[in-house]
Image (tube, rainbow, N blue to C red; front, side, top):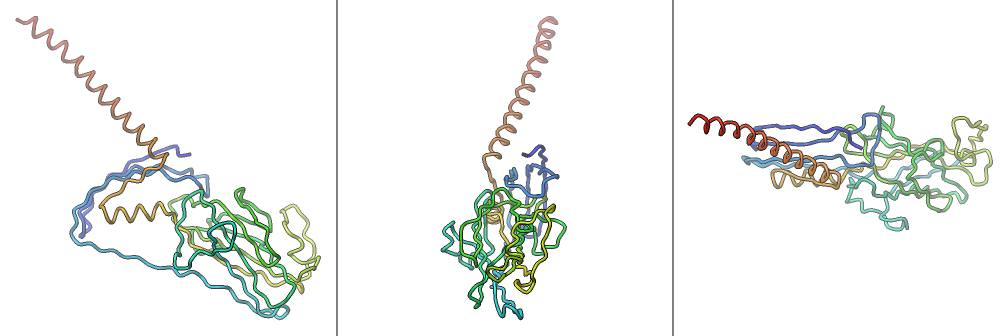
Length: 289
């Protein structure tokens, strides 16, 4: 939950517009890495247009990942987003970067592609970051050492070459608008009892058995993203078209209602004090005649 709010008031002559803007923002919990709650934000602005200028950029979806190793030949991985939990309809690549709403379920599927008849895919880890650097200081572990770390993850039944799962959408705290997900994957020979695939989830306290590296590939990393908050994109579009924006969610409506009530109470107190002050003045004027 949000515990504080602040007010911003700015006047700006940008050359293209003369903008007067007022904004109410809530603070996020600094001890949390991610959140699934929308930030309370009320923006008011008016502007006088001079010259309009609009720009945008396009981020292309990464294509399939292809690798070659002596024991497994040439193989590859695909990392796709699906429209539902049937995992039969992929999201159109032209829609990337994808816009998401907090708490929506993202359906993702990782598939291994190999000419070998008996291989098994193992997803060892999946890590979310606010940029495309999976080694950055800010990250959130979704899967770690084969163990699911996020309570909202649901893994769906699939064949040995596919890993389908869903997760509730989230964002990083601290003003970040994008989320990337990077997973480390391994391909193993089916039926090998000493491969990383056979070991499965390994907790930190668990004893790791010696692995037969000839029965598995090296660890490879594949990335999906970025995901962007649809609320922020719509907010920006409305601001560019109308010269201002007002986005009200359920939490925002409550916050705005309390804000308006406080103003009404303050005005009432001022009127009451003014009446009390005028009453003695009238008595004094009557007694002076």
